[in-house]
Image 1 (tube, rainbow, N blue to C red):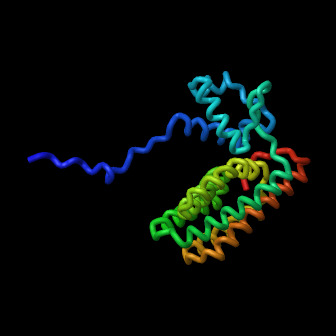
Image 2 (cartoon, rainbow, N blue to C red; image 1 turned 90 degrees about the vertical axis):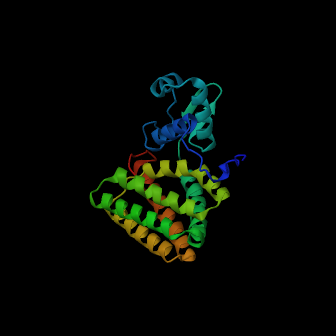
Image 3 (cartoon, rainbow, N blue to C red; image 1 turned 45 degrees about the vertical axis):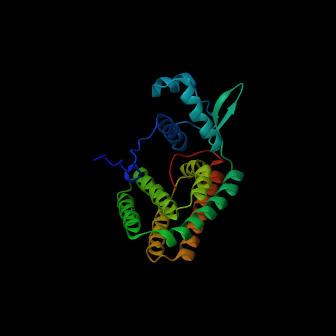
Length: 236
């Protein structure tokens, strides 16, 4: 009796982050978190040595970051970290707010119980970091929550547009010191976001997410005004 061919369509592929993706992520984090400062040149030789890669994958990674608006590549100066101005904040944050609002509406329509449970768990972990005043860990969980809502929306075009701005928005948030009052307000906003998602109230979640981004923009702009545009190393 002849063997039947295997049905490979039912087998999930093995996923592994490529060297390219890992390199882009590492460099993005270095820029967003301020290790590579605005206006700083990106020394190719030093970065190649640090990451154990050749110049070709490094340059490909820098092109991706340039497409995200985090890096500027000049034929004569090489790559430099882009400066973020108040005008950039005033342009970016309303657009990101609109994208996140749409993501919230779509997520409420598409998210399943497992997705809500995952976001709820992330929220409780984030709040625990807030109570322990662990800002970096709080910020990491905060970012994951927004990413899970975007994933739950299930819209590839929306995800691509969001990704094109996400790096610069994250960088801007790191530029602003966050007061204890604003941090408490941000946590309360996330409580409301979770409640709206759990209730699958798309219109309310959209408005909450839009307002959440607006408040962050206000904090960043206020800090820029207070510091004369100088970057600070904290999160919002």
